[in-house]
Length: 330
Image (cartoon, rainbow, N blue to C red; front, side, top):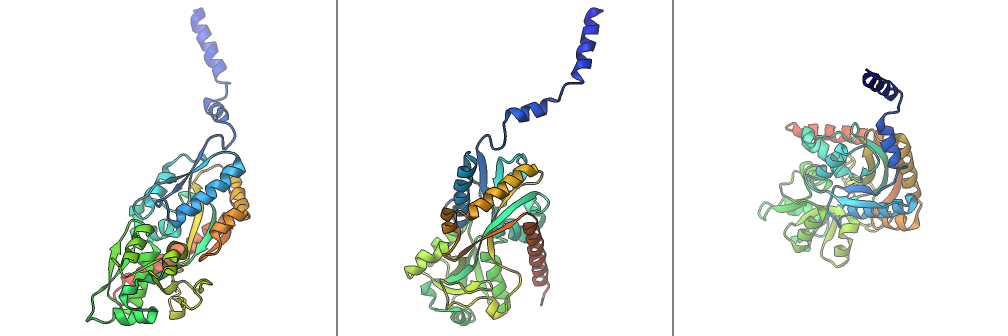
């Protein structure tokens, strides 16, 4: 009898004890108390990886804890994005995507991507923008965009092959838009990432392909590729004589390439606020600015709701454009 009463008293007392979860959370310490992973959904050596590593160095210095890049590649960046979406929303697994993986793949692949960039993620910020350039191999025998149009329309010559980094990428969607607008018959050659596409372009295995200036600039300076047109609305200081697609009437959708910083949806607001402060501080750091500014790039700083509004605009614009081009004669 006394034993039963003792157990009842223990149970009654236990009802007033705090649950175990807060105690475990407290033992983990204030965030960040262990290394943080920045998932880059593209291979090492590409522009997104370069920016991710620069950001990791800045945040490691600011927070006194290791921020480590984790390259998780595949399916036009969606493998890494889905990995972060499914990770615990505790601030220890974050995402550094670009527009191709975050917007382009959603429009191109639809439900197959299994994530929603607005519903499934909390925006920390967008921190760099750049324009892609359509490059040509010298062996194609053209020196400018007008020459490309004339060569592509010449049915007596072999079909021009263009390299693409996959469905939803600027390298694919922009070139396909150009092909539709000017009624060009081009041969698409897909690659897993920008680096192998550029390697084959330099080697002449494909005749044209789009990529940003930092990636292709060294090959341009060596005379191994030629810039044909800037994909966007502003000419680049590095290529002042190269026209833009906007000058040819191609203004929608906006193909500006951006790289951003995101956390899984549900990440605690205090952690998100600290990460936004960290990104803002990084944007003022001279070593960081040296990487994201110039060479065809521009450092920017968009935070929080401004990023959400941008994502909504870009998704709507790309989807409308995709539907228009899906209609015969559209």
